[in-house]
Length: 255
Length: 217
Image: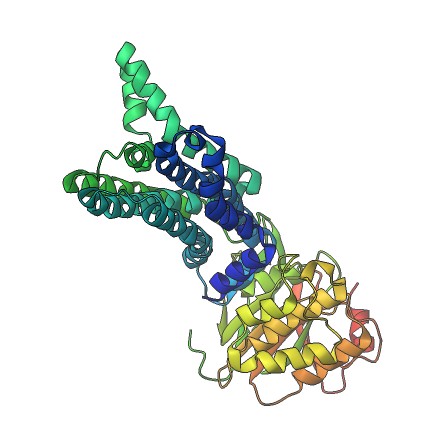
């Protein structure tokens, strides 16, 4: 795990993770003050939920993907990838260690957001409390599965095409999966089109992992069969993205 | 690969190296064992290509070779993140038992390990990556170090310190070192030379750079 330790230490030294940690810790308390919640206290908790998970999404998609892409490119262009390969660390293992190091910085942010929701936005009703734990746990699992697949892709694309491509392509894919697929579905409702239907079917439905609205409106946890089906879907997406990432990932620059 | 016994590199006769077209070929079998071997050639004749081929990060064009030992190839352009202090790189990459030895050598070489890597001079950066390679060897195992231009940017004092370290008989290490020597009396008892598309091995106890450089034309 030498590459994991080196990558973890490198990200730690850059210190930009601290901005994300502070944002996740502070914005859920600061932002509601600028919203309607400042006049209607009943909206305070929903606003806090939205700020907490919104901040984690923004930090993960902007900082997380950028950091992963930078590490993927750096491993390839600095000669470290080639060095590790000669010591017996295979490209698959290098990709895995880079991916784990990137994910290690996202995990605390997600847990912090879930923790804020559980501590400072817990419903008063006893029945709703049990549901609150469940839905936050479901959100954490689905969020991590989505981000994990995107981080792996960012590392792999960046190792081959540079960090700018690694970052923008995965950010574009994430935004498409979160918002673009929904737009296609809306178009489908206006007028059915077989091409759009196929496109939607083969698109990553990252929006299914965004449970912010469910928390916001207290719609309750996902029923167990739906949650496990959604989890299986994202595990499948992760498996496909892992395979694509491994094909794209390389440890040294083209000669 | 069995790395329990003494390290060696065997280039079979007919081993051909190159990227797209052949650069050099070994005419006869060459066997290198524990100790330091220099790799000499003019620019663009295939030093890095040979090292990369031996490190298996580049495919050979034809022929075969064999390496026994835990292998590390140190590319010339190896670098760490600009904001990472060298001490943090050492802690991440080296076994805990060897941190103190590595930091001690860094101190003797006047390498400031607290300074971010990006603020080190070229020579100090080379010292950092060389220390990583030297202290990543596996004690009591055969080790093969393939070093690409490790002396570029190093001052004479540091180069001598590394050469002294290389004479330490405690670790069985085979070093193949590509370099452009800068003083005639530099001892080179074993040298691989790439010239006119051929890989040749010259070995003699009193061999120096002065006697070998005439072969590089």
